[in-house]
Amino acid sequence: MSKRLYVGKLPPDARTDDVQRFFEQEAGCKIADCRVMTGFGFIEMETSEDADNAIRLDGREFEGAPIVVQYAKESRPRREPPRDMRSSGRRPGVPVIITNVSRDVSWQDLKDFGREAGGGVTFADIDRDVPNQGILEYYTLEEAERAVRELDGRELRGHTVSLRLQDTVCTFSVFVSCRVT
Image 1 (cartoon, rainbow, N blue to C red):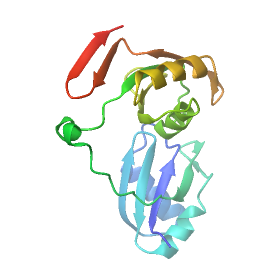
Image 2 (tube, rainbow, N blue to C red):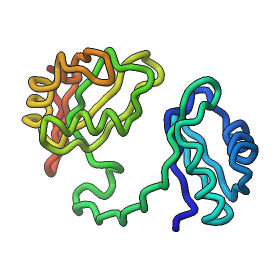
Image 3 (cartoon, rainbow, N blue to C red):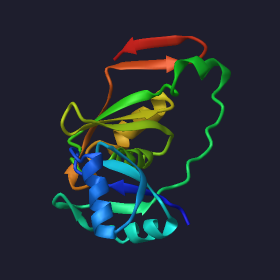
Image 4 (cartoon, rainbow, N blue to C red):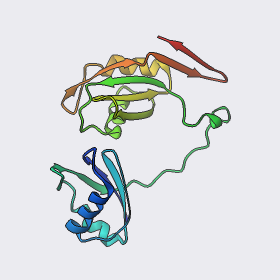
């Protein structure tokens, strides 16, 4: 069984040391590696038995809120990007701004929500600099427009969210072209 765990629903200010101490004290396990990002983290246990013990902490309160503890999904091998995209970093997308996002929504929740409109979500993130805002990116302008039509005004984790296309939309083929909408 896997020794790597996903820990979700962490408070935004959770620190690696605090998470590590919590798992060591509450599950009595030894941790090989612990990485905490905003709202989530990954823990590599010394043994699969330690991981089994730590899984029992799923739903337990950490700093006043219940956390999610699951076996981490295996990372998928990355596909080779198309030749004309290799130098540009991540795949470009058509950005959609989503507002009134609850604090307990993760980027994974946001991406799943964005997929409900069909089409391919290329990127999702919660904007920690702008409260209650996130971003979704779609492969095409048509997919982004459909998402705005179908998801605007819907509920996401108890909050009615609003979606709009970002002011600047970039499209990529052989050349990059941007237009302000």
